Length: 178
Image 1 (tube, rainbow, N blue to C red):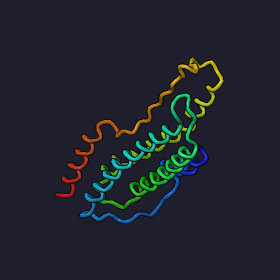
Image 2: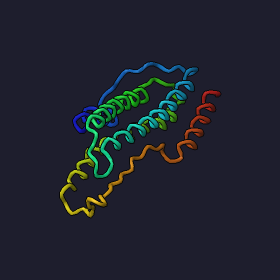
Image 3: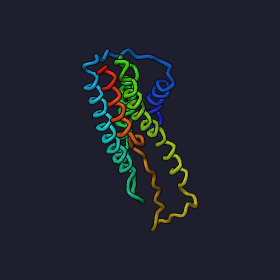
Image 4: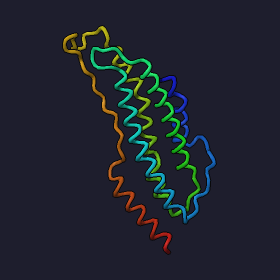
C-alpha cells in the first residue's frame, strides 16, 4: 500500500506546497454558484465513498485471530490509490480554476477538505507496521483474548464548515449585486 500511495501523496504534497500549476477552465460568474454546488456535492459523495472504502480495507485484515483476505486487501489498496489520485485531481480543479474574484473566499473554504483526508490515508501503512511489529511480543493479548487494536480514521468537514460556507455565500452574493 505504501508503494501504491507514494506517488499520489507526493503529488498532493507538491500541490499543497504550490510547486506546480495545472491549467483549468474558466468559471464564468453566472456559472459560479453551480460550480460551487458541484464541488460541495463531490466533497460529500467522496467522503462517503472514502469511508466505505476504509471500512472495506479494514475488514480485509480479518477478524481477530483470523487470517487476512489478501486479494480483498490488494483490491482495496488499489482503490485507495485511485481515490488518492482522484483527490489530487479534485484539489487541482479547485486550486487552479479561474473563478470570479468575488468567489475566492468560497474557494478557500473548499480547498484541502479532501486533501487533508487524503493525507490521513498515508498513515495507514505506518499503522499497519505498528500492528505487525506487535506480533510475537508481550502486547497483552492472548490466543483466547487477542489484543484488538482500534484506530479511528477521521472523515469530517472542518469545524463550523456549514456556518462559514453560508457566510461566504452571503458575502459572495452581496459582492456580485453591487
